[in-house]
Structure formats: structure tokens, C-alpha cells
Length: 146
Length: 312
Image 1 (cartoon, rainbow over the protein chains, first blue to last red):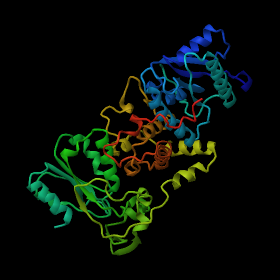
Image 2 (image 1 turned 45 degrees about the vertical axis):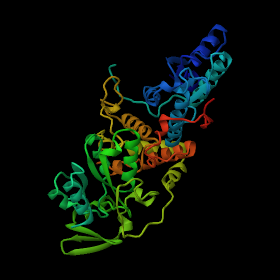
Image 3 (image 1 turned 120 degrees about the vertical axis):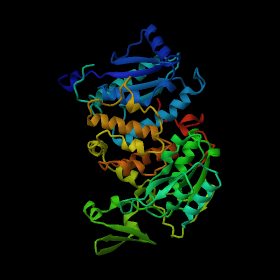
């Protein structure tokens, strides 16, 4: 990658199967345009997202991470997103405290009916991460053969 | 016979416990060491003074199911409460001997040359007597006090079956989050640079994990191969990953006993990071770890009205 103008951020999105992934699907079938910088990992529930995955993604050179689940009260497993909210709040506080840029890791609630909101969130996250530039803070600069 | 020794002796004689875990004088000045007494005779060596720094609850999960008596200071009692909350121990198997704690000393506060020149040292009241050959120096306890003791909010054990009182004066309790505020005053970029610099020396020996009473997982993420979280080629990035992940695993659990900092052979001190998470848990969820054995772990529960301001 040369100048900042050419920089295309890579955003990893952990989307809950029941809401946000379906929201992404709706955005797709509604032909809504959003930046192609997002790579989606479908997870059963936002409560299944291990905060270590997020750290690992940043270490492997992802420029931004989004975790998205069902709105409070709508969890398919009743309380997964409530548990996730506590855990991710602490991850956010920790990253803020140690000096990670705000916006590198984002969180959202997107329901299956919110295709518009999904497209909007992806636009926002991509532009935020683009403005921050390549993620480098946690990146491991060692050649590995995997 | 000292009070801890006679109490331990009677517990063993009456057959109430199989083993008593406590302190005995160490071979190095100002460092008491853990002592396990299985017979009444072995109980004679128990002591309790301000050199009894180690948190002994680290030995308890491996004694699960056995009848154990353990000496606990304020912080140790709180780590014991977390172990009980997380069902690593049962209250029935334990006899808890509480120690009212005036704060403990650590020789890490002395310059290494001075410490190496010592032949013996004793604590008398608020003074530490340092002897090196014919030299005798008196320094105030305050100077050698361990960092967590300076801000300790719960110096008295929160659970106990017996209590050994202290005759030392109590300290003024300093602001527990002073170290956090100090770090937060730095610019964001500077904070990351400081963190990197702090962990850059880390060799991944996991002494902090071994010393931690709450790092009891038999399969720690650091030891896993599929996926491999850290290493095998160790870099600062791995050190950062390890320490951030450890901090997250201790969020809402760490009781600030200081064992990890004392155990580190490279002198890495991330106490302020654990304190920040403790503060976050308190502010967001109104929870203080290690006070109530019946309370569910803070990250294993929730309230619908928990703050979600950071979520779009």
C-alpha cells in the first residue's frame, strides 16, 4: 500500500446469526450500497464473541473490528447480548485506557429488519477506520509460515 | 508459642484439618515463605508478621476436596471469596484464619545492592531494622510497604472462622485509582508507548499467571496450540496480547493482591491496568470483587439496564 489515498481498510465484522447477519442479508437483497471493505464472520450470538478474537484480529493486521448483535431484549438465546455487553464494555474500556485508537473496535445492535442501519454502520465504521489509517499497534511483525 | 502456631497446632491435633497453609520465616531477609503443616509438630514454625507477603490462596484450588486451614490477610480473603464464588473450593472444606492486616512490606522497595548486603532484618512496630554485618539501619515501614497496601480498602478479612488481631496502627487509605488517573493524564499515543515499553521485557515465563490466585485454569489460553494465541516466536506483540488478555480475564475478579508484580523476574508492573478494569467494573456495574461469596461473578450475570452507551 502506498499513500493514504489508496488505503483500503480491512474491517472484520462478527455478526450474530439471528439479527445482524440477517440484517446484512436484508441490506444485500435490498441492493443497498455499502463499502466492500468488510469481511463477515457469522457467529451464533454476540455473546459467543471471545474478546481475544478481537485482539487476535488486530494482531494479524486487521484495521478495524465490528461486533454486532441483537438489540437488548431480542436475543435468540434470551440473554447472550446482555452478557456480551458487559464483556465488550470492559474490552472497550481497556483498549481506550492503554491507548488504542477509539473507533478501531466498534459495537452495534442491528436487527434482521434493519438493512438500512447495517449499511449505514458499515459506511461509518469503514470511514472511521480509513481515517485512522492502517492498524499497526498490535501487529506482529514476524514472518510465519501459516 | 506464637498465636498462629498454637492455633494451627490445635486444629491439626483435633483432626479438624489435614493441612494448615501459613507462613514461616524465609531464608532471605524480609521474605516469609509459605509453610504447609501436616502434623502438630510442623505447626510450631508458623509466624505472622509484616513480612508475610505471599497470597496463600494460590495453593488452594489444587487442594480441592481436602480439609484445609489457611491464613489469609485482607486481600487473600478477597481472592478466597472469588475462588468460592467460582466454585473452585467449598466453604465446608476450609477453616479460614483471618489476619487483621496493617500492610505488608516488600524488600523489592530496597535498592538491590542494599538488599543483597543484608544479613538479617526484622520489623518492629513501624520500623524495619536492617542489619548488614555490623551495620544497623532503621527505615520506616512506610518506605517498604507493598504498593497495593497503600491503597487497600479492605485490610480486614471479609470471611474468617478465627481472627488474629493486629496491634499495629491503621493507615490512612489512599485513593485506589491514583495510579489510573496518573496514566490517564498522558496522551493516547504516549499511553500505548508506555504500555509497549513496560511489556517489552516480558519473556513469557508466566510467573505472573502462576503466582496469581485467580489464574487457576488447568488449560490456560497461553498453553493452547489450536489455536495458538501467543508465540511460538515471542515478540512485543505477543507480550501485549498476553498481558491484555490476562487483564481481561481478571476483569471484575482481580483483588489487587500484587502477587503478579512481585513474581515478575523482569519487574513488569501492570497493576494500574488491572486497577483501571476494577474501576470500570465499579463504575459500570457497581460491583467490587471479592466481598460476597454468594454473589454471581460479575461477567456471568447482567442487568437489563447496564450502560450500553458505547454501542451504536
